[in-house]
Amino acid sequence: MPRKTAHSKETEQETDELSVIKNKYEEEIQKLNQWLAAVLNYLSDDEIEEIDIEYLLNNTEGLREWWDQYREKNRKKIEDEIKKSLGELSLEELENIREKIKEKG
Image (cartoon, rainbow, N blue to C red; front, top):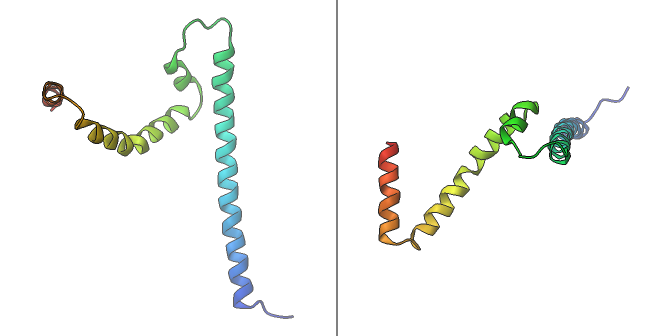
């Protein structure tokens, strides 16, 4: 019986790794589809007069955790946007921001 060459073993390992990655992405896509469907069902409910984000986050499995992770990943972008806009603010606006930061600390 012929032995597998090192090349074919590497190819098989790469194929297995790609399969795992593909499955992970398919699961993620399925989760996102479920969340999107839940949100759209909520939004399309004629009895809902006011959108309650907390309701959606609390009653859609896994959505709050995903949202918190998304917000944390987006934090750096927000910080950069704030830094870029500081030069456009007046001295008074900058002083107000500094006071708010001091109040937090």
